[in-house]
Image (cartoon, rainbow, N blue to C red; front, side):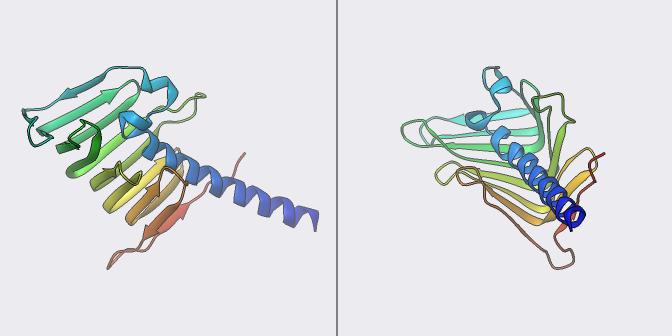
Length: 175
């Protein structure tokens, strides 16, 4: 009986860890929610083209966009940032084939990776959406689906299947 309970606790603990590292993606993909080690670093944006319209509150970076902040690295074909009239971040939309994300988390853990055809961050309700062929992984653990939604306020993660793909999780046993 004890062994079964212990194994169940280990499985639940591993699943919790998987969801936590998925959450790291959400926390890190906006400079507002970056991890403490990266938050204080400057944000660097490189692109083939940039269009910034202060009147409309929009900045568009196109062509091999690379955004870095500390250990955070985002690669996309196009990134659009939308701001409120008070210059607060409203929305970030990154599109690519796919958009790629990478971050080295605190504690010398393996890098967190993610990719999707589209990644959206909605600042007004603190949600991150990975859309179409969404995947998040760290070492051998992996979480994937057509769409992954993460609420950074309450920690709720939801994944939906697509027409051909189902939600999948690969959880490697702890050694």
